[in-house]
Length: 188
Image 1: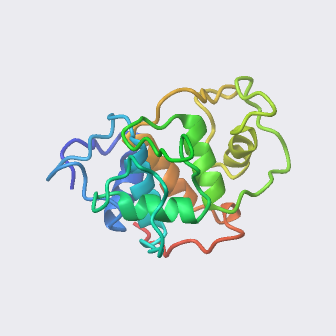
Image 2: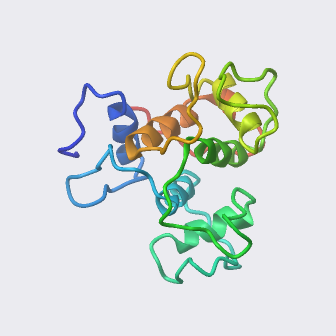
């Protein structure tokens, strides 16, 4: 259990689910730090564990991913799977904070880049952006409802608690999965 996760908070179920499925051990014994911003290295590791820690033969081309770091296998897999191309051809930026637009794109690619039927209702998600289709898919599959009914806030940073919620919703939403096989789910 995490002493900093209050059971009545919106992210509690997602964090409990992450822990139950061994996708996290927290940031240190007894702490999850749900309000901390999510780094790209943490995002990579969550997604990698979500897919049962697949290993790939080749290292990613990212010179800012230290070999034998806690996230290098995750980053290698993200690159090999086409889920990330990095922030530049040879950079992953593991310490940068993940935006909601980036999170949407990571999850959309993880699930096979499914084209949604309709655009999202969010006024702050313009057409033609790298995240436009991903956000529409996230909305269509009910992984997100936005920060309001007509705003997604694509440039806002994702917290660890929010990411736990998004992953929990992803795991329990069969409509999200077409190309890849979802990981086994332990129901609480």
